[in-house]
Length: 283
Image 1 (tube, one colour):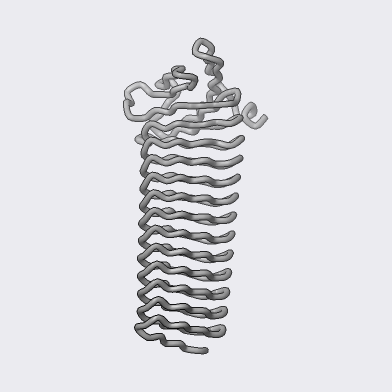
Image 2: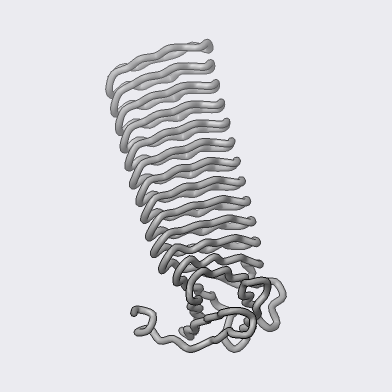
């Protein structure tokens, strides 16, 4: 094991595998190999470490690059972190730019973060107006703020509180959460909507599904045609509404009691609502 101790100035510290670094204050440049532990301290630090390392950037606008299986805490500041697969990254407070590879976990923390995550990754945007791009089979929680989220196939996205813009690909599930959200669904994707979620806009490219939570029922649903879109509202509920913009044949809506309906339309005077069973949906 090699132990490196920095000063309160701008240090350059280079270590081998299994190094322990305490850089102290200053704008430090640190490079170590695998199985190392780095405490960069306050300052705008640059840290590069190989696999299975633990890096704490401390306060400041840090730049961190680690290999697979590592853990990174960016600390306060506008940090830039790049981590390979099976890593855990916490950006901390600040407007961070975080990029992680597959099978990782990332938390943007407070601030307007930009997060790019590869497949099968757990993403939490935290508070702030975040921009999140996640690949297939990922789980994304935008957190509070007006987030912009894009996720590939077979992912789950929750926008959280705020007026979010969400786009998901085939087989994904998206929930805008509370706020006036815009949700776009790829083929065979699903949107969920709960009481108090607000006035959302739903875009459906081919054939999508909308699942309502407890408190909504088919007998209370009103369907109207406005400006080329279909608007879904409910008797006795003045706060929740969904405007559906569809380029496909229609939308399947599912209620918590198991009721399934297919809404189809071709203009204002040609809207139909029909019951749908599970066998029909699978075909």
